[in-house]
Length: 414
Ligand code: TRH
Image (cartoon, rainbow, N blue to C red; front, side, top):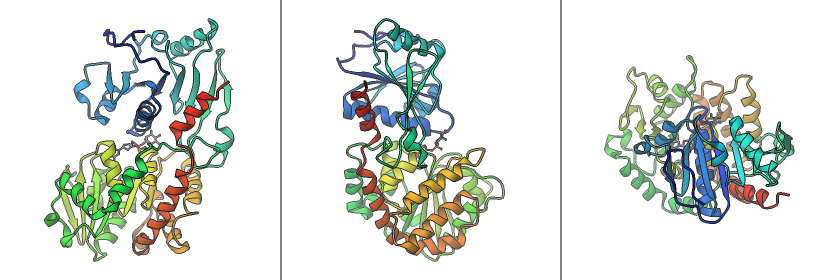
């Protein structure tokens, strides 16, 4: 079988194995693409599937993958995944003809013509593809009862809701088969990995405050921009600056930099490579890293401040204490989601005192509140919290990963 292409080029035939298609709408930021790309790549590498990943924001996706050179194409092969631009002129009937499973990521709403194309196959006596809606991650208990529930659609096909999650009654979390071994490797000689990382990032220890060296505090910061008047970032920076202990905060380039500048009392937005010093704190802007390098950064930090969905999950696999800036929702639904996660995370994270401080810091961080005092309480607890973070990682690792759960669902389908 040869593959029709959206760019008019005929691609070589796929090997004779199952083909899945994933639809991804990049709502904003990189989270949706990050999750879909990671899943697609894992399905190809670890489960031998052919995967088409259709994304609506082509430029953002190529930028995320460092493939802006492919900008003029409407599809490309990337690490074995067939990555395609989802646009109005796609012939969905042809595109989906070989797919035995279609994932609509995060309720992104498939084009009507795609749905008709899928349903047409059913009408011809063909079973039609399995249609899944992969949902956002939540630690809330109700997720378990909605996981794998089907709903009727306007066609002969039903759609099944698939929820990632933190318990055996959900689909689990994305986790590549070599990920934990990779973290173990990076952490075996953490000081060495740190030194290599900083060197790769072009960071010179001599430029850092108070003679920072690789045994001192290292944190990564990835968070959402805040409303005017928020005290969270400035109070945390100030607390680290006055702590007397050399501290290094690495901030990947992105929209947060304006807040970072403001929190450090600067007017100019910093650029990659800039080192900003305040007391014993150095804040350094690093490039937005390729995905696998970001895992390495998370692995060697003493604390990771993360956001959204995918960086949040990656930080859990890194087995270091984390502070989660949850994606804010209009009706404050995120507060419930945050509490649901903290209730589970707090269950294994360190001794009772250190655990409570970490949870409280998470709450204050999300409330835009002053985190200065809490930081002074939290800082001495970080070594203890590392044990809890490892226990949490191990507990999660007992569950099947999301890609394997999807495969199992697919194999056992009626
Ligand atoms: O980008 P995010 O804020 O995420 C999303 C979206 O906003 C989405 O609409 C929303 O629904 C969802 O959150 C809950 O944050 P997230 O999910 O962490 O995605 C960032 C991606 O970028 C993730 O795949 C990790 C990756 N990343 C890198 O590859 N390199 C980096 O240097 C950094 C900081 C992140």
